[in-house]
Figure: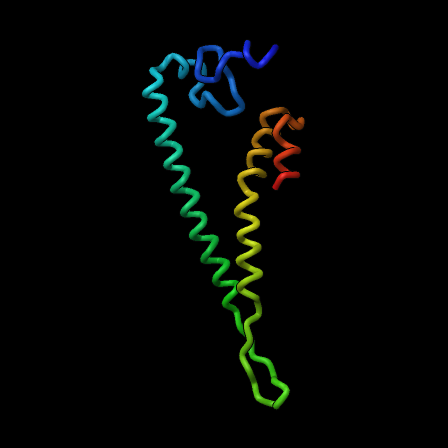
Amino acid sequence: MSCTSQVKICEPGGQGIILPIFGEAEQEWRKGLRAVLYLLGLMWLFLAVAAVSDIFMGAIEEITSKKKRVLGPNGKHVTIKVWNDTVANLTLMALGSSAPEILLSVIELFGNSFYSGDLGPSTIVGS
C-alpha cells in the first residue's frame, strides 16, 4: 500500500497509533468539534508539562544549593557548594531538549508491538 492510497486518520476507517482517541465513532463527529477537543487536550498537556517542570526545577535547585563546611588550608572552616550550578543546568538542558524525541520513539515502539518503526532509530541517533 503506498502512502497516497492510505486513509487519513481523520477520515472514517483511518487509524493511527493513538488517534482517534474515542474510537471509530469519533470519526463521524464534525471536524470543528474534534479540533476544539484536541486543542483543549493539547492545552491541558502543556499545563501538565509546566507543572512537572516547576517541580523538577525546584528539585534541581534544592539539590544544587547544598553546601558543606570543610577545613581550609589555613585551618579555618569554609563553606563550599557541593554541586556546580553550570553542570546541573547543562544536564537539565540536555535532558529537556532530547525528551520529545525519546518519548516519540517510545510511543512508536509501543504502537508497533515493540518493533522499531521508521521514526525510532533516527530520533535516538539524532538527539
